[in-house]
Image 1 (tube, rainbow, N blue to C red):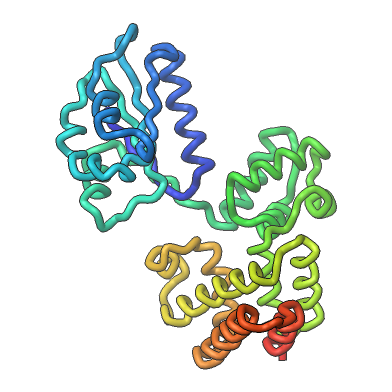
Image 2 (image 1 turned 120 degrees about the vertical axis):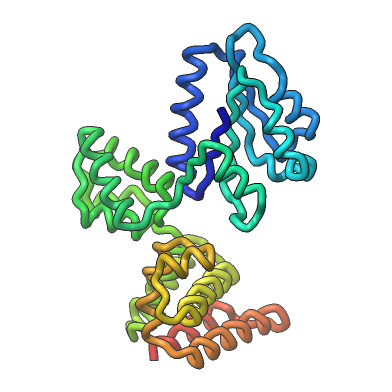
Length: 306
């Protein structure tokens, strides 16, 4: 049996992988499990692992991570995988696969294919509510959504934060969320831009100050602003396409696209070009002159708000 695990949702992927490997080890023993890192192992080592017979067990399981990083494997994967004996189970873990390649098409068609896509904000919020309940705790849908907004739409990250929150108090509230979690810089940069585009210059400057208090350097803020403007440019160019379609074609998180669509509707392409040009000017000047970046970026935000 050959299985393929892929997708950006590392939390669900690893959880399923643990379940499969734990069940196999419980039946066949530790010696029947072999882990190979395709980024480091030679092709000969990979070939030996997947074609050799099990030792002191009736079956073996080979866990092969990112073999596409090995050039020889990519060239010979079809013949290699055809030679796997019936006594060997193989799990290929490829977090990111290019769907245009024959390698992806082969895995999709010829193996048991498991895709673990990222959860959107609403699904993640409902998952947090259900998970808290399963662990004897409580979090409302609105507070779960607030947690996602605050720390980002990573299931791994919100799961870790939820565990910490439940240990502190089984009844999770916004007060404990603010007390025990930190706003991610990317999330706050979006809020910063959202406030500026809404004309709320006071809130925009407060959020900028929060970023600096978190020790986020001005150059990092420029990079994150540039990334957000890049997302807005993609959305504007996409016209009336849905968030899911835009996310898929541009290889972005659907949650990020949906959040950014509101801002994109408020500006024209000409205004967006000006924003990109102004930010580029600030970045270039900071590398050539003794520019006060904090002052320049705050002026940039005030210009956005006005």
